[in-house]
Amino acid sequence: MNWSEIFKTLFVYNPSEPMLFTSGVFLIWYCLFLLVYSWIYNVKIYRTLWVILFSFFFYYKSSGGYLVILCFSILLDYYVARWIYQSSNPSKQKFLLILSITCNLLLLGYFKYTNLILSTLSRIVSLKFETLDIFLPIGISFYTFQTISYIVDVYKKEIKPTENLLDYTFYMSFFPHLVAGPIVRARDFLPQLYQKLIITNEYVQEGLWMILKGFIKKAIIADYVAQYNDLVFGGVKNYSGFENLMGLYGYALQIYCDFSGYSDMAIGFALLMGYRLLPNFNSPYVSLNITEFWRRWHISLSHWLRDYVYIPQGGNQKGLFWQNVFLLNTMLIGGLWHGADWKFVLWGGIHGLALVLHKLYQNFIGKTYKLKENIFVDLVSWLITFHFVAFLWVYFRASSFYEANLFIIHIVTNFDCAYFIPFLQARYLFCLMLSLGFTIHFMPNSFKNQLFGYFSKMPFWGKTVIFVIVIQTMIQLRSETIQPFIYFQF
Image 1: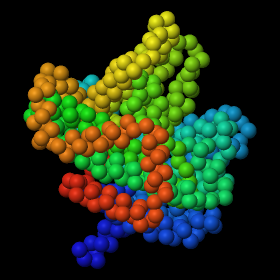
Image 2 (image 1 turned 90 degrees about the vertical axis):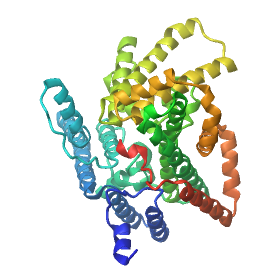
Image 3 (image 1 turned 45 degrees about the horizontal axis):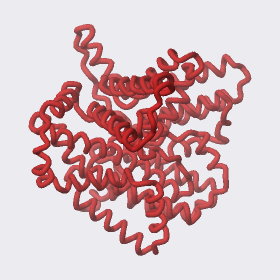
Image 4 (image 1 turned 60 degrees about the vertical axis):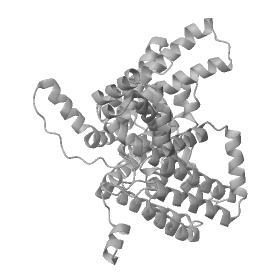
């Protein structure tokens, strides 16, 4: 590799290779970033400018010229929030709120949903609407929801607007959460900007631990099982029902390890800089019902949908019937947020129906015929909840409704346990990763805390050895095509 190629790799945006947390290019840049950061972090203005500069560079390396869209959103909502806060006219405040939300949703709608609208119209009116070649800017769904929450909270006088444009830019562009969440609420993050920044040893140890966990989840487990999942979902008819079921379990593990691994790394990188982001996952697959699952999965999105979609509709204030309607509407919107395809809406709608049924059960049947809690009831509840969630993930991964339905039908009609031993022999490393991933997931929190305690007490050289082993394992197991983060497409 000559100097020109090295320069392009380090500095120039490549659409086929966006900068990821697990890429060597990012790790080089992050180490250089931290080196400078360690000299200047005690001076707020220097720290703010340096983090903004690096965050913009990081987003440029992830989405290229679409950095302009992010900058437009930042400028628009910074000034709109200040005008809302300074105005004493309720009508003007409401107009500004609607203006901000409309502009942000129109941007999101154009980049994310234009082709869905055109293809749907083609089916409805029997006219051929050509789809457009539109690139979806990475992270636009996350930062759109984030800036809307900021504007709404300022409008409701729950928070004050930031003191200056630099602070708001810092909050919106903060690179750990920028491209794939979690959705960071201003009320949780902004107070940290105005406190004295102290990077404690506890923050450093926890940050390193979260980064290590994220690497293992994403770069080792998720990326390896993805190789088999891609084969199965790419040719459903070529595999038995048992092999498809293993692909279903594999994708359930992949999407969790991929997204929670990213969130862990985001939290870890932020901690090393002295900032705390809230947890985004809490062992969701241990849930005993669908309501519990949504309290544990993608927590920042669940809270956002509750506070900015469900409650504004009326929430729990208009009776049980409307409460269930609002809940179903919220989950349909949540499904559409995940992807510009009707299969995501179906996914959200079915989850919404399940939440409604569970709420009805709790309000009526559960109160009258309350099941006695025991290990058998818990096991059955867990099996139903886990497989309900896992089978619905098929609509995330499959390329179409037809392929998703075919995948599920194939599992039901062509399942044979006789494939177990041959599969174990042929795919032993996949089975090992599957077992490792779910074992880590189901570990009690007390045991995980114990592991963290051992890690934090290790000398520096011991931690270095562990990271080297993890990186080397990642290099050995990865395919020729590095797997992007799944939630980049959302």
